[in-house]
Image (cartoon, rainbow, N blue to C red; front, side):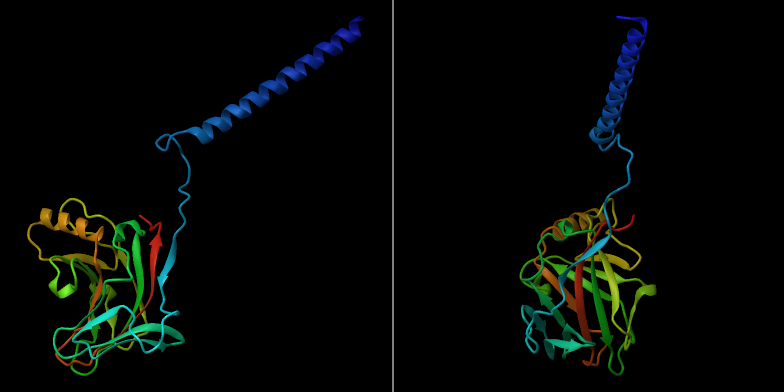
Length: 241
């Protein structure tokens, strides 16, 4: 073999060596990128904020009430309003509640980071023009006889105003920690009966993972004329911190 052939052969071997080394390095880098533990990885959170519709009443029969039950209500039924089917509740004489112990999941904490819904309110004469009523969850058979109830009360900056278009609220779905119940920019959870902060936290955490159903408080004054519309229940995923 002449000198020229030896040189060409050596150059070919060298090129082959560096090509192989490059392939090994690329494989090693990719392996490190995709096999690291959660604690060691430095990547963007792939979670994308969304809200999965749970109930919008579009499949319900108008004029019926489905599994919604009213306590001293004058009317509970599905109606068409603003081009959409909604749940309508009208106040009656006495303490008024509308509740559903069938359609909603028991473990709210497992559904997402928040429950979003639309609420529209018409006060009627001599009743409060604004309301802080959100939504509640309860244990046992119904809200009035429940051993434990939790209710989401809206902040002063997020009250629902009589006669306004539907207001969207977001209710945090998470376990309580320390000595306070969950809250967000819309409002805060309260519990009944309330005893000590530690006991309230324990009761709330048990309830939010094993609720019998949901309820709405309908009263906002002494005149039984309040009208309410509820729509677009969805479970929000990936709430911002």
